[in-house]
Image 1: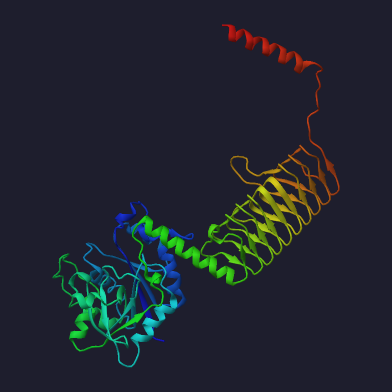
Image 2: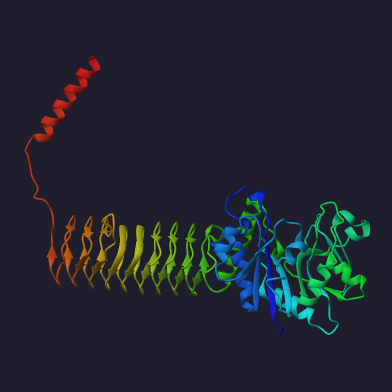
Length: 452
């Protein structure tokens, strides 16, 4: 396979998003839209990646870090002009160039490969265009091509005649060309149009007028080339992605009780025979092992759920939460940077932060690990088979030994040894008749206040 360079256009202002965040950095399923595209590009191991930036360049340059080169388009004079800005970054590169858009995030690696493969077929196309056939072609530019995909003309909708508008094959804007052909053709693109801009698709018509072959590759999924320019389109893209993931995971043997109410992240990983009840949200970084159950209204992020575990309902697992085989967290339990050992349980109303809980330990209702003193975080360790009574506060750093018992209502600030009972409560004080006298006094005061 020839080496190729990916040029990603991301210089637009994205004014329709009405956001201080650059358009291509808006997330879909927990990942910036440009990163969805970059992940597909990276599957093909490009020799070079160049992102063309403009408005909000600092945000994109920071997001790309060392993952891609960037170049500036200023002023912004059209897509052809944008691609030309990458020429200096690709000086000396003589392979294939694949041009894509940062706000068209769902192009599959297989589709990119199909474009590159067509570019290197025996008829030597000067350019390969990615085409699509939407249900309603609207005002998309048309690709006039024969049955073999050889293009005779590219035409903008406003310039098309009735016969050309009747053609359902549309231009996605994505294109592949040999580097030498691309730069030479772009040098010949003019700006004699209503916008006074240099348009990338014009290289196709120039090449055809030279007698060169240009070809179209058609995607079988028009949603693959959907662009995102507004909050509404962003929401539609999220919905499209989520629906595809729901279908994917059910096909992999995951039970979704109410699929439409479950939301995944780009890197969610579920084993077969996992059951997910309604209204569950998977944030980034979640892995769930075979046979686990995620009950309704739970939110998981950065968590690892072991085999046959049970989560929720109404549980929150934050980054660093690890549940080992057969462990359980119930309703209104929160875990953060904590390990719940095999068979251990925290059934309700508990916070476990910066904690290690041993095998078969039981954490009573209302228990919290007090892990923060306002400056630093500290760890709590709870041994195997320990029993923590309800409404206990474990003030870190502290260790509770194996088989130890902490009595309900205790505030434990010192280590508890193996097999010990620790009870930390104030002495109960009883004053006979005090409450009756208090109520009598307060009732008389209230009655007097009403008379006034």
